[in-house]
Image (cartoon, rainbow, N blue to C red):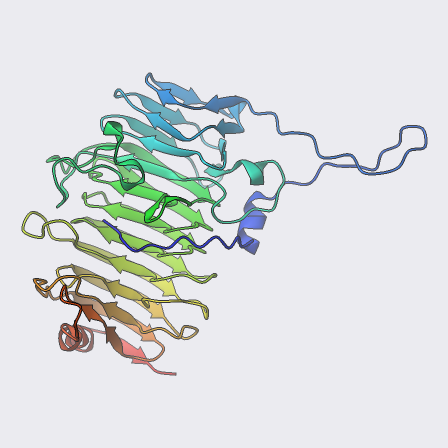
Length: 389
C-alpha cells in the first residue's frame, strides 16, 4: 500500500483542463429599466443525483446529464451495475468519490466522440477548474494481492464495504472506456488520499481503456494488486505520482503517457508492500512516454520503492531533461528486501543518465543496495539508449 504520500493543495489550472471543462459564464449586462451591473451565471440544473448507496441496477442517460455526485462516499454495491451512457458528465461535490465495491460493476463505455466525463461540481458550475476539487473513481475487486485477507481500501479502513482482494484474477468489475477523470484527488486524512483512478484487487475481466486523468491532487492512477490490463492511459498534472503500482500488481499496461506539469513526485512509482512470498509486484509496461517537470520534487522517472519489486519495462522514453531528479530511483524499505532484477528493453533515457538509490533500512542506516544491479539492468538491456544533457 502506498505510504508517505503528501497531498499538495496547490490548485493549478492547466490549459488542457480549461479546454475540456470551462463553461462560459452565461452572465450578461442587466437591462431592467436603467440599472446596471452583471447578473450571476445561473445555477447548473442537474438531471440526476448519485448519493449514498446504489443497491440496484441503474442507468444514467444523456437526459440525466449533468449528474451530481453528492455527499461523501457513493457506493455501488449488492452486485448492482451502474451503467453510464456515452457523453454523460458527472460532477462531484468537494468531498464526494465513487466506489464500485466487490461484486458490483460499472459500465462506463464512452466513445472517442462522446467520452464520459467525471469532474468537479465547481468546474461544472463555472468556477476555475483545478486539482483536488472532488474525490475520484475507485474499483474494488476479488483478484490476487499480497496483502492480508482482510485488507480494505485505505481511505476508510473501518468500512467493511471497502474490502478488496481474493483469489479470482479473472474477476470482472465492469468497463471504463473513453473516460475522463478531471480535477480529482484529495486527502481524506494524512496518508489516506483519493486518487484520480484507484484499482484495488481488480481482475482481467475488467476493461480499462482510453482513460484520461488531468489535474489529480494525488496520484493519477494507483493499483493495489490485481491483474487488470490497462491500455491507452494518459495522465497530466498529477501532484503526487503519475502512475503507482503496489501490493503485488501483476498485470500489463500498454501505451501509458505521463506528463508532469506541476510539482510532483515519481512519474512511475512501484512498491511491493504486503508479503512478496504471496505475490510479488511483477508487471509489464509496454509502450510509454514519461516527461518530468522542472519543478519535480522527488523520486525521479521510475522509482523502485522496494527492491522486492520487479517489472518488464520496454518500448518507451523517459524524458528527464527538465527535472533536477534522477532518471530512476530505488529505495529499500526493510532490511529483508530481496533484489528482483527488472528488465529494460528499448528504453530511451533523456537527461542525466544515472540511477539514484536511497536504501533506508529498518535500523536507520542507509546503503546503496541495488545501485549496481539497476544500472546493469539498464545498460545491458537490449536497445536501451542514454542522452545526457
